[in-house]
Image (cartoon, rainbow, N blue to C red; front, top):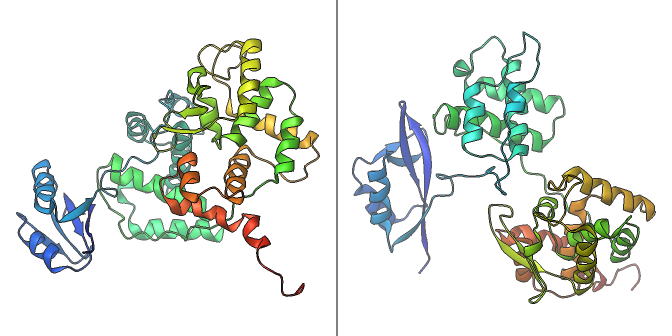
Length: 375
């Protein structure tokens, strides 16, 4: 029997918060929904809904227990939350010097970002995008801006050549104000988003990776680059490593609070382990595995400079980034015959679809195909 699903949505109907119930047409689910207290139908959102309360939520879970899986991903969202318990700094935005006619991000917006512990990069993006929006409508109070105004603003961004990524960030920043700060869930429920660009990851050849590692300036830089590649780590994950995360007995690296606040283990190279031991004796890190001159966590900019500098010395013409080493790790594993499911676990991907992108760049697949010109 096919598994049944019902998805919960945040709705605002006649100024009141409601729980939307969205599901594929099913007689069993329809009958159970009809039995919920105070359930009604919304023509605007094309779904059933009930008033939003903890009691209503309990009723929903009890009603569908053992019958259908209740999907709350769209109801309880925590995307953008700080991944590594980093110090959240919004005072920089409060203390900026701006011209008198510049409309600044409301204090309530900054406060909500701070309370929800959004990552600093997310804070910078949201504030920048939202201020660009409210300064475009400088003479209209944000509460009076409607859906058509937002569509006109997004159309302006498209005409100016803004990327799909930036437009999506702008939508997220605007929705955050109305749905989270002003507590008007799904005020812009039907807002269209540009299609996500499906770009293939850029990958280095193994020889290029080895050349980059060989051209690092010292043992510390070599360990940083080797970790990015041999463990498939994100830049931030390398920076948050602590000496105790290196498990030399089990040949594993523990990654705490990776993307999505998930812990995982990944591979530890025997070659790298020897280099890390040498590095540890020389540099004697205390709290973090890689530290700056004052004992603070190593900076993201330093990692970028290390990779760029070593790539330039290695004579690699293409622009190399730390994340390209992670892409190369996944692709080279796939090319050597590693099961895609194992690669997904090592990379910490939530969905296998994210990992499947590497099948499009793995060269062993193409080598098996005989080119018609050569046959």
